[in-house]
Length: 542
Ligand code: OOB
Image (cartoon, rainbow, N blue to C red):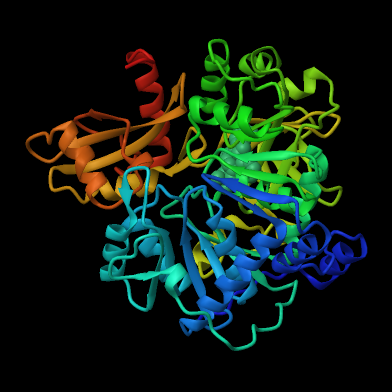
């Protein structure tokens, strides 16, 4: 089994410890601590369930004993694909207690992505909910099983059919293993991914706990806060910015929202007196629209975090009037660096910037294409390193060579400018990915899938500005012989087992792509040309 590691140079690690960023806490350890301090306070609410801190800890301990009873050994990886239900936490903290390594998949992922995670992480088990949002995850589990090797166990929350129901696994009588080293890898997150399939991001206890402890502080979470997870909780934003982990660290109450629709979310905000939640920009727009006619009382909401994609100043300036709360912009990435506008910042900063880094030791460089640092105000490529930004992906030498500089900076691929006060303003992306309502789609991955169709000679996928999604995907296709139908091509991509958000929103047929002087197709230039041509010729609602 490939070793899991995330290593900072010794002098940096020493500094991060000396400055109190890395405190030697572990994921399970901090929850156990909270359960001792505030055992009877409610930790999480979802559906009919309301679990106290002591109750959550007890369920996590029980689940640890169940995972060990399956024969899983410390260090083994377990892909977790669960919706926003309290069991997400009892499973994940159960894995932490058993020294097993969760790999966080999103509910939207399908056989191609899940099989990729299983293989890259060499996972031994896969945890799913039986059904969610009309989709049967047991069917998916069967497909994943058929495609991969080494996946010994499928564990189901709910009706398991031929798999193991979590609640029916007899608990191991043996002692639980000692808690892991805080410097060790706690779990694998997944990247937004600008080339190919998502990459695996090893995060350590020390670094991740620092990021959400500091986030909880910056966002003002405390024991009387009620944090609602409206986006899929496995994503880094609702997980740790400040997210459910930040909320548990602060001793707050978590409300698991099963769907981000305004109807469901507003009803829960009223019912549970939610004080804080986070959304992507398109959802913020929907909620702002819905609030004017909503029958629910959402006056408990104090802070709305918006991030994952650029929130334009125009709607940003309307958040308070529409929803009666303070906007906090978040610009973060699963690889590390997270920026926030501060709650007491003047409106001008809250509306026009994407915030400043969490840590005084987040190093931010803005450089031109040749790596030369740029002056404040000039847009350039954002590079970063710091106490919670990774130095390497798991098991991916090619991506590591591309994504990190020799001195350990992560190349974010984002184009930003910095104000004199140190706030970042996101201007766009250097890479070819589509940020579709916060879901990141790799152009290359979709092209590869389209090229597998016998009727496709060549394909180029680009992002097109979209008034609702921020960006949508458009595939330009040179057909091989007779044109395949648009519906057929979309169904083909879907049928290859990809998350629905990766199916091209639009398909345009062309006769040829422009080539370079030596007859090669430069995909970067091509995508730029196609994007420009599209914007000139097709109205934006097309
Ligand atoms: C968050 O994480 P990922 O890993 O899904 O995506 C990271 C990328 C960034 O590199 C940037 O391209 C984009 O998402 N992004 C934003 C943004 N927040 C993220 N672009 C413009 N404005 C923003 N506010 O998306 C994520 C992780 C933690 C907290 C928040 C978001």
